[in-house]
Length: 114
Length: 113
Image 1: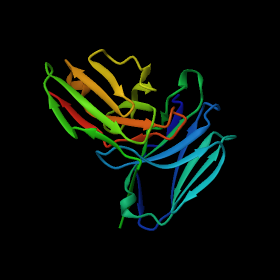
Image 2: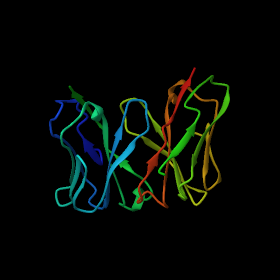
Image 3: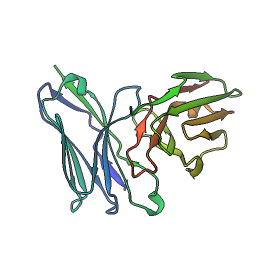
Image 4: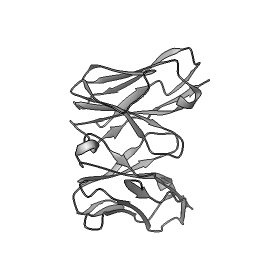
């Protein structure tokens, strides 16, 4: 079992839809949770960074962390074709053998069609 | 400015060549990272430098040799690579550790013939 599970999709939605992306994880020690967006053949771009449980909103993006369920989500409102990319969840702060490392999900490929 | 720059953007090399990848950041970050990313996979950590010292080597073959000449620069020296080493090589930096936000560069797309 992978330490972080993320459905690779692909996910295809119409423009204007609300998109929900999710990751589950097994290591309850993770404390820092991130979402990155990666366009084809480019480096990952940080979208959201959350410490511990709770919600964080930035424009059309909302990140949620539920540590009790070991579940994190990214919501994209009013999705646009420019949101078409691979979305990677990542987490850190577990210490031990994970100290100093980000653990990534597999990435979800999202396409928003006009 | 949250920019990490990488050169070159693309690199094609033969298995007997020696080449270097370069990474630079001017955010005052003290941790820098090399990742390798294959198509449709997440980035895989290769090396971590913390305060200019190598702190993590993820059992990477010796044909990859990292170097951190100063706090702003990170190099990856390549020698005798194999075709399976073809990938996107990403550099990242963070304030002081992986618990801080990591910012990625655009990557170098490497093809080994």
